[in-house]
Amino acid sequence: MIQIHHISPLAVLLFSLTTFTVIFVFALARASASTVVAADTFSRNAVDNWRPAETGGSYLLTGGAANFDVADGVGTMRVPKAGVTRTATLPSVSVQNVDLRVRVQTDKDATGGGLDVDLIARRIAANTEYRFRAHISADGSISVRIVRAVSGQTVQLGRSGTVQGPTHTAGRALWIRAQATDVNPTTLRMKIWEDGQSEPDAWTYGASDNTQSLQALGAVGLRAFVSSTSNNAPVTFAFDELEARSLPALDVPVLIGAGDIASCTSSGDQATASLLDGMRGTVFTMGDNAYPRG
Image (tube, rainbow, N blue to C red; front, side):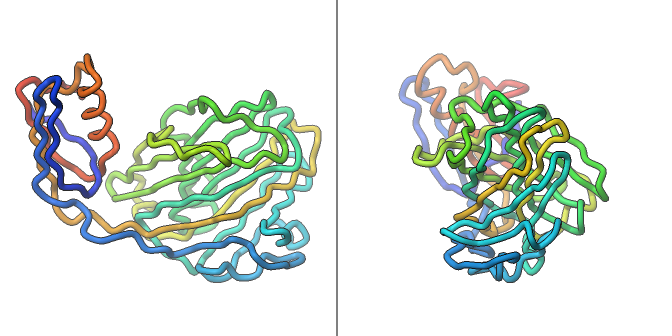
């Protein structure tokens, strides 16, 4: 039986001593390292503007210049009332396979229907993009959502999931990291963690999508929203340490031969299965005990 996994560029020979699983990776899927296409530490001052990013060109700000400032090492985005959105994008950036990250905090707790913070990838036009969302509820819990937007029509991809561990409090920073890679389908994934904590190895949430208009190069950016039932607007979102890296495209398939790794009855099985889940690229796994769903 043959299984297909999505894995990263890696050539390894792994032995699981507890189950005698052997994995052979015969070729590299991605041939080169990532390249920084946008970066901003907001180490400047600006009023009613963000001024150009350190890498990535000038920002396109939507929602009124008076809602955007830079000071004290952060770019602030003020959402003046409930039910409205503010965005900052880098239209000079054009990237398909991208790894994004940013640190963000708000000056107020969430109320009502909560707050949304989005990392934007593959922005083709206004409101045509992928959005990697941290949704902050009034109780401080955080859930992750990946949203496809095409001409303003939005669809959530997969189910949302509550993040275990981090909670939101005004003034406490969170990190958001996201990736959009490959085409037909595009693989989408994200993770969230508290500032000061180690980045988790595992991705919190993943989805895939093959909407044709988004299988292309696009810009990157940031988006903030205050729900229509919130009662404490205005809310200011403060961003820093923004980074976008272009990831190389898949070059060649990767072939993996594996034994019985799906039962996860020992730490060796779990480690092997975890490694496979974390790899990227399309590969075939062939083993003496393959499972239909892996």
